[in-house]
Length: 252
Ligand code: PGA
Image (tube, rainbow, N blue to C red; front, side):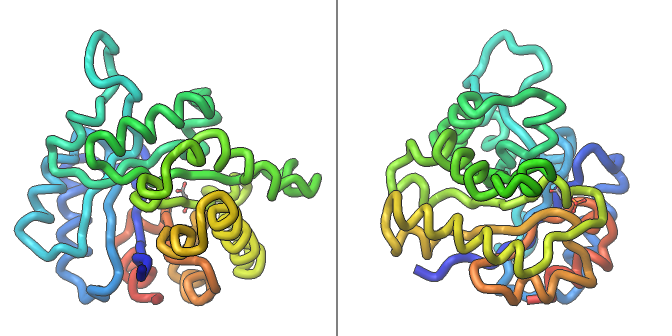
């Protein structure tokens, strides 16, 4: 199975509604490669509006949520459930972004439940993993990433895991301007794919898109995307400017 090339923009807690609409319009009006799946991850209040912009257009643009609850519904003030997200036409959900793990103390068990909830409601989880600087310096980055896969993703069946996307985001590279080299990133991506093949099989591993995230920008995207086992990027800061995001998309 041919895996997808994906460039996703994680806007985090940025933009107002008019700014969000302007950004989506500008990106969609630009020439971008149809062979690349493009995903916008706006803040929750903009999901409906962003989806409305996409539905009138081509099928290579999608919308994603930055988070979800692991609960279906109920008295959880301020949370957003996967059926609610799916009902807006949204297709993807970020699960386990390092900011959620660190700032909001999300645990491996919670992330596992969030992934299950996404899949139950036909949402594609983009499961984010990656080590902190201390772990890399202690040469523990492979074991950390392996544990993150085992704890929250590897309970899935081969059929279910094929519906997921993985994003490798070394925490020391997020928002720091310090990108992993193509060699460092490629080595980890190959390791992740090898672990999936070991747990499931090669065909399953080859069908899963593995994105790189962490200070990926218009300058370094080409080299990263040209690296074996890197199937695209999860872009933070550089996704907030249409011109940069378009350049990154067209870096494939
Ligand atoms: P960055 O963020 O591109 O600003 O480093 C990436 C992310 O957090 O997904």
